[in-house]
Image (cartoon, rainbow, N blue to C red):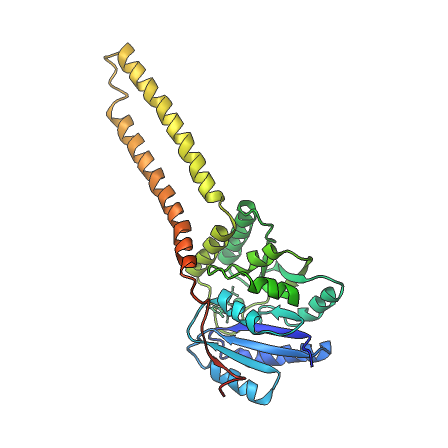
Length: 312
Ligand code: UDP
Ligand code: MG
């Protein structure tokens, strides 16, 4: 029997919410009247999530649990889920009920109309803190400015992917994975679906500010080399203007030897300015070099410790 729909849900320390999620998801899927499988990717949870999940699996043959050997992060958990999925369509959904499972019906409908990717766009994030909303908004706009790729604004990881898109994604072995960017990059027919992002009722976000910054940096450095170009351009502008200034200072010295005003202060400020710019540029180049370093090792993206279908 071919499976029409795979659900991929990354789970990291969601012991209290996962059962509710599963129930709500099942209700929707049974209504949808398609053959389906549910893949829970346990991303190295340290609470009882795995036990809860294994209990669900016991009663439900359509559910499968893949446990990663440690916490590899949201993006790699999704990658593992895509690798293990077999459905003709795959839907990635957060297991914390912030992405409403009910929207799956509409995604399937749009997929039937011939679209290969249906990406969820958050129209309201009232549930999230002001700060998170503001930073997210800023980041999405910055990324779409910087990137050569057309990455949709305000789209998260809640989306439907056709089998051919999943196969295309599997051919991208890069380590620094920013899935939203990759999905845009592979192309195919894509359509947005607006939905309301719900409040996180149980547990708390596993994306503290520091992780968000790292994700943002991954997004930008994976899909844009504009920061390097900006550095180059500003370096050149500064070099030219300091050269002009130097010329002016020397000229002034010759024409008006008594004028001391342009001496020491000017030199110190110029030197520190230059040093600052050089360090920033070096740091930026370093970011790209570190990416090359990571990719060059060709390590596997994640390691599976346990699969509920294999070694039970
Ligand atoms: N998640 C994961 N690995 C991580 C962090 C999060 O698999 O290292 C899962 C988490 O269980 C949830 C989803 O990814 O299902 C989204 O994470 P979270 O809700 O913490 O992020 P937010 O919704 O606040 O952006
Ligand atoms: Mg969440």
